[in-house]
Amino acid sequence: MQAPGNFARGAGFNTVRSHRDVEYDAFSRVTRELQRASRGKMSLARAAAANADLWSTLAADLADDGNDLPDDLKARLLSLAIFSIRQSHRAIAGNAEPAALIDINLAIMKGLRGEVAA
Image 1 (cartoon, rainbow, N blue to C red):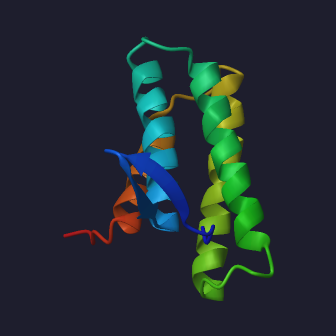
Image 2 (image 1 turned 180 degrees about the vertical axis):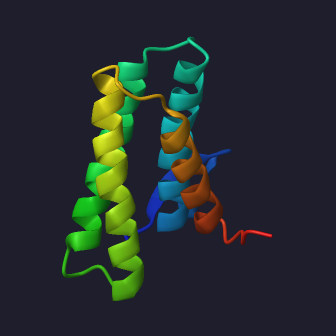
């Protein structure tokens, strides 16, 4: 969760996007796919595979020596990553619904936006 910011093309000029923006967009896209799958509008296996890929990438970043997040936060996020990857694989196999994955992703998105639970 500490990827360097990148540049995105927008309205005829370059804008700098923070790593949080990039991560939020990735979670938003995958979560939308999971929500569509929960309504039968998309393959659950495909959406869950995308979710597993996202969390695998996140876990690798969290385990990287260059990641400067506090160790306790990294540990909690790695725990969520392990659960999300396992649950995604269960969904791919047809043994789980996407609700828990959606809830976790939405919570991560709130955290990336700095929103605190009421």
